[in-house]
Image (tube, rainbow, N blue to C red; front, top):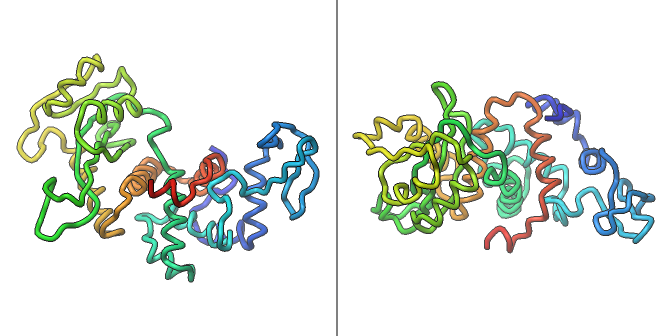
Length: 296
């Protein structure tokens, strides 16, 4: 991982990104640091654009800014405040709600909510390195509250499948996804995308897992003991996730984004350097995330 941004302190961030121009320069250095390539023609020759740090292709004349084609595409408020949102989301120990971001940055809550959703899109853990070694899989429900109803009877809550990668006596990485039902197609699809085939997988004896077991040579389905006694680490992770959702966000609607944020934060909790920069790199490499794609 690159170590350009090497501190979690607010003072280090302020010295690196004092102005909007600093933020544009930061994006340009990452986006074109390894060499310019036109997004349209792939030509590697350019001239200066209309604005500082813009680049114009000498072959097709396509004009490109540091934010074009990234999650920052067509941002409608100060880029410096957008960087502050990324900093808070990536470095705050428990994350911040859009209401708290609004209070800190003097932006409308809806503005903070939408841009935070875009940041969470770049935090997606489902398309990165698969879990391996000792892995456990289970389901939970989470999301919105419903008066007088608890557990899976709550129609406002969403079903989630979660996998944890164990290391030593603890958990090293996790991944989670919302599903419409606990079917072989949906749970099996999640496992195929996030878990290496040769992993030592443990699940309970739910019929869906039994139907998937033949696809994984080392998968074991065992009856869950009272209060999940044989899946203690999994239940600890689930309780931590539910506690974070209730404590930081109270209730959420678009649950997948918050799952991505929690998994990203958990998977990087031992990383002492470069978390902010790594997230910025993800946002630069990710396609634009308009409102319609977020709520779809």
